[in-house]
Length: 195
Length: 195
Image (cartoon, rainbow over all chains, first blue to last red; front, side):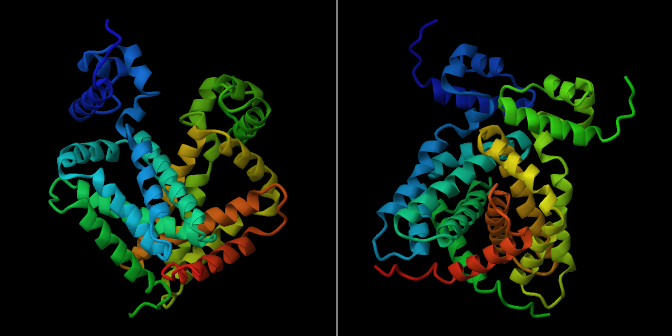
């Protein structure tokens, strides 16, 4: 068995997603994923700590992009403008060629609470990274946490709309729309209902 | 072995927390928890699906309280007033006699990413329940999601401050403070930094 495994991670991710779609996440073993990718089980564990993580490959790295964009935003940017730059930064990841993969992946996650759990933790990590970046810009608490949560909500909404199988809009456009809608909604939170 | 097990759940929770504090979460097995509680391993699994869940006993039920309070709020309450009522409702759970338990439990969760994962999922569930309750009041999207996330952030802040071992303030007071601080911070999100 050669130790040199070009694209081993990508092959394992693709094999895992194919199997999860075909036979379900719970019914798929790490051994089956490795076999489909023409690799060994120990090779799988060289690349991923567990079966869940295979669907979150690369996410820790690309979830750094929003925080970096917040730090790089102009010094006179408002907290929400910095968050808008953060959401925009993910446009380099959620490109049209990535759409079919993202859309199948979301369907698998939506069907499994273990995966939703991992996703919830990853997203909490994204919010923390954005909060920390906003603090570095001098935004005080709780404004930094609030701006980051608002950004996360805009991201979640935009990503869900983007990953929808029927969607043809670009991620960046959806992210800007979501953030604008949240800002407008924000003004209504202290208004009594019309009825 | 008698099948009648008075307070079995409570005993398992207490035994688990004691063992997690004494020897760490990872080093503790379900068999050890059951033994400490003078129960069998199969008895453990009659009450909890896995080792993690033992620290979240009852949470699904008391996370219904905020949603119920939102639905019961006066019809002319603003979304944020309904959220304030939701946070207040948890005051019946986070009573002073519960403080020592909560504070030890938080220390265990803070030291373990598996438990943080479960907590992140539970909190996402709380936000969803509050969002759904706000929608039932006629609050439209994305205002309902935003108000719920703001409420969740206020809850997380207030709960962390309440569960701190040194804290002597009541949960309800901390919750009201956190929400007021978030409302004030909200106004600053579109302001350019002073520097």
